[in-house]
Length: 313
Length: 217
Image 1 (tube, rainbow over the protein chains, first blue to last red):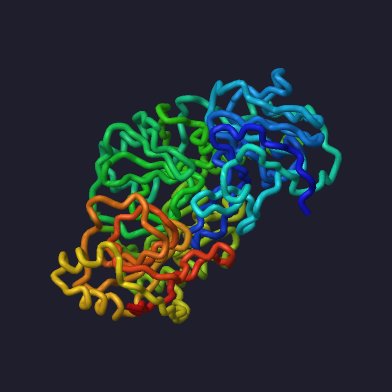
Image 2: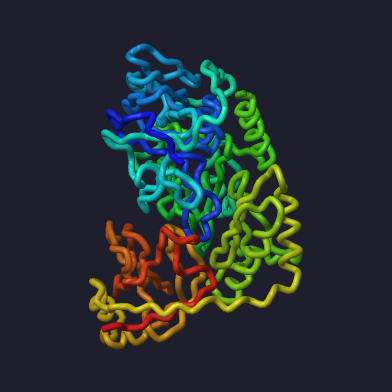
């Protein structure tokens, strides 16, 4: 089923993994959804090259890989701006373009954002585990043998290009999430919001939260003015991507794609799906604010983002 | 903050814009947990519900807002809670062999004022319940632990606990499915894998199952 290799990894970059839209449906087994941290950017990259949104694509953290085309292929780079280069010349972001055999895709350095996505027409193949090729390092499954890319890895296509693909498709900036180094993330009140002392409720939605160095695919520890809780300890319950939990330290944790599926810290807020791409592009030291939004408004904002994806045709 | 038991049934609280939590109780209790597991199973069959994950006394729902609204789910939950629950299915019984030689065995026995043999006898005596599964793949929250075995967590968690470690803390016991950090007291180990990546579902113990440990040494 896997066609021949299309790309060879000349340099893997800091941490580059194969991802997709994850493997929902397995939380009963304690398996998190996983998949791309920035679901909008990976879906856009796939659509730009004519793939289903759920196809496998690369997620590169902080710097990009060096990839050499072994066969002609259509690619698109979205998400963070690491300055993609095609044979040394500037290549456009959020745009589909061709690589001819021997062409090199490199990155000149991070300009903004944290995670860039590289999709290839046909979709990248990887180890499928529980219905997804997303790399889940904790258990060493999915992706390329469950690990980040290494020098010399050869990446194949998941499917032959079923239909002719075209270069030049582009997603303009106005149709992307409002990526920003100090974003305001819309979030709904969580089930345990009222466990916060009244002053802390205002603080949660009013003050700045800095992303600490303890920030990875599982979640971000945030730092700011301490939140005060009241009430006895909770018994454990199931969690979701985007949950904001407050442990006894009073410093919140934002759960991301590979989050723990259960825990017992109060869940005081849930970041809207439309705002999670903004969170996915943050780095330690950057700040965010949470802005309270109703559930229906949050759902509507996701519909708007989705319509931008659907317009890529 | 005491939550009033509303005559209209438990409330569904948003956990984001595509997930919600319904809490049916605040205690670790077999009857409550049985209801949570039953409610999750019933909700899983409803339109727009993608996942329904039981907690100790709660259900976390992951839903598709394009197919069902939070208000509709709230009404569904109230109707299901009012209806007579289906009789609980007795969970599968697992017998798990344990070599009781963990690095915290002797210290735990000392802290509890028990002999090592007595600690082992007490730990292997009950048939434990799998209250819920989560945290990491294959982690089963087992309990309740006999009263004389209850210790607070270690003050300094280990950065790496080997997979297969049999551990206890508070009223809970369990087996580490993967090498992860952990703050529980390690009293033994088993060769029986808890996380089985090539199975679907990829785990041994499921919510509602029962577990009996037996000493191999």
